[in-house]
Image (cartoon, rainbow, N blue to C red; front, side, top):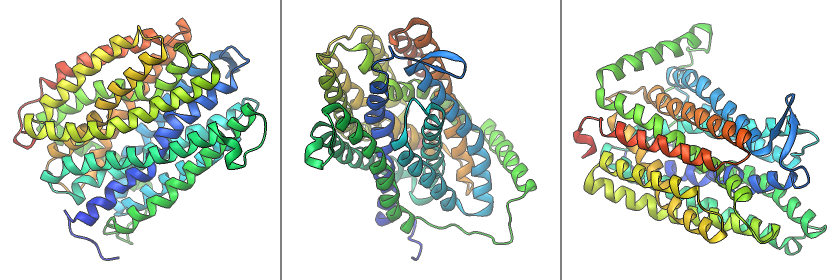
Length: 441
């Protein structure tokens, strides 16, 4: 396939379509079905399990494993980004992590408490695959879109992702609630658990199949066959990071924006990762069946509202500028964190889900495109975006550790949610320090 020109509508759509392919992972695995499945495994264990020599609360355990996975991604992604730019084969790296994540999702079919360590390994590798592929996916944005196209293209990607993942989640919900129609045998509880396991396989297949459209159109890059991955090349990755750091020193707006992003993104991502665990444990559901249905409906509501939120945020950034819009969204997140401490009923959780969806898609899409706009003219986009991704990953490590420690000590995540609000307040303060930039007006 001949390379499409930068800014081509077909190329931009193909890039955005990867969100359609991979967003089933954060929705079905991270947010909806897996947390419910994982919680159900502990129904007769009072939420605790002996693991790694300790008695650990289940939600704290998954938080610590998640934090470790993000730490690994944060450590390896800069090296991989430098290598991919040097060798000129960014798409191959993106494919590797895509397939690693997708096959790990399939592996979750065998998740059990009796084999907790290998089960957690599949969960761990799934996280690495998903977030590792995003390093290279995000770095394509300035390569395929002009500055004036980047906000809209970024928002389109998130919108595709929300729409595609909702379709699969609705199918999974139907399987869980009506397993007989899908030929899934067993008692009601057993059939529902089987349906959840089948949904993990469906995520892996969906991710691999639909990503092929993106891979078909994304540029291959100018790979130099004389360049081989060697010890010297690994050290070249560190040199690339050092070079980018020096460039950041010369770009005050970009550096200050990265600091603010690091702070507020740790709260955004942590809230997204623990929302279902919070709802399962802290909301007073009438029955286990209502809990399963209600939690998935809430996640669906977030996804659908997020489509509108991403588009509205893009329009707001065009009218008011990127930084003022991000400041407003962070202020709204502060209010949501404070309110979360008091919610106890399903109706409260439904309302909160709608409000979270409104700002979740917007803050993610606008954060990505804002960073892209602030980049200097360079062909080394993967190394620059590795800084962006490393900031996000280290932030998630801190956020998940804070959540896990508070949850383990207190037995409840309510105080952890309120504490995350502090990060949004800090984000507002730091965003106000970002110098005005014509690219953001």
